[in-house]
Length: 185
Image 1 (cartoon, helix red, strand yellow):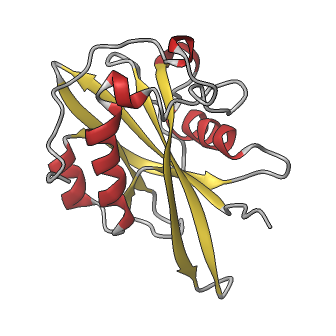
Image 2 (image 1 turned 60 degrees about the vertical axis):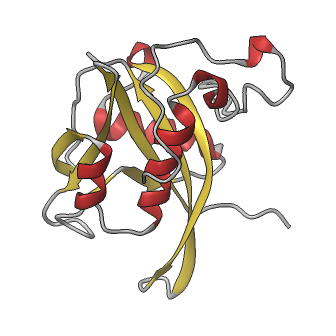
C-alpha cells in the first residue's frame, strides 16, 4: 500500500560568490513551535501532488516562485516524527529549491524573520536531527550539476526530470559552488 506523507519540508538555498546559503525562517509568535528556526514547511492539500505542495508552500511562505526559482529537487528523504496532538507518527517529504541569488524574500505572516546563512550556522540554529541530513544532501549532491540532475523535479508536473534518462533530463546548468566533502554536514 503506498504511503502518503502528511507534510512537506522544502529547503530554499542559493549560491552567491561560490558559497552556499540556506534560508531559515523563524516561526512567529502565536503559532505552533513559535521561535523555531526551520526550512519552509506545510501541509498537503487534498488531491495535491506532494512535490507541488512543497512549491506552493515556498511561494506562500517566502514569495519565491516563477523566475525566482533556478531548480527544484526531491531530496529522497522522509522524516517521521511523533505528533502529540494526533497521538500518531507523521511523515514529512523533503525537497529543496535553488533560487536566484538576487531573488527577494517576502515572508508570510507565519514567520517573523528569515535569514540566509551558511550550512554551519544553519546547523547551529535548527533543532530537529533530520535537518542535518537535509543540509548534507544539499551540500554534497545538489551543488554538483552532474549529481543534482538525478534529484531534479519538474516544477509543473512534480515528476523527476531524469527518470527516463538522457541529457535532456538534466536541469539547466547553473554556476556550481565548490563541492563539500562527505564528512561535512
